Image 1: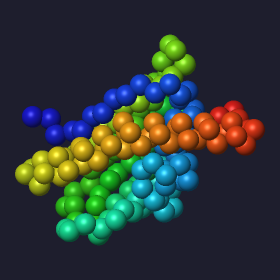
Image 2: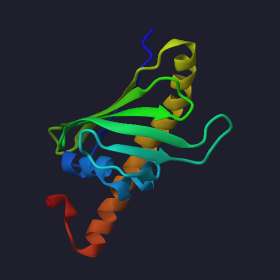
Image 3: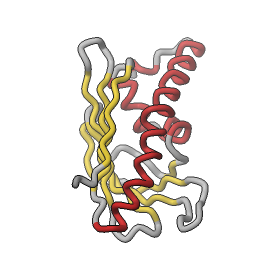
Image 4: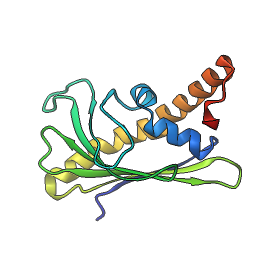
Length: 154
């Protein structure tokens, strides 16, 4: 039985717009979690923080593993109490209609503890990828139009 989490969705936004949502710390703060020290550069160590819960202090330690700008971002993911690091990989593919096919793969859940962690992470990733990220993209588009700038052309 595969223990990876894979979530795919198609977004109406161009890959560069989606890429910005995945790599801009301000955007990440809004749709994923508050981020400390992130840059899309291999070797960059950063933290994501959330409200602590029983058994978890709310901190995820990460390190950027691979970057193919606009196409792929991969980083390690290890909660403070996780025995092993897992890997989060985002893959972006342009669609024929000008949008983006986005795939999240979270892998490395081993053993019984990994199976439990997978279940816990899956619902969170579904919320982030299928609800919060699309909402962030809509909000960002509204801000770009309101400010009169088109930041997607940077």
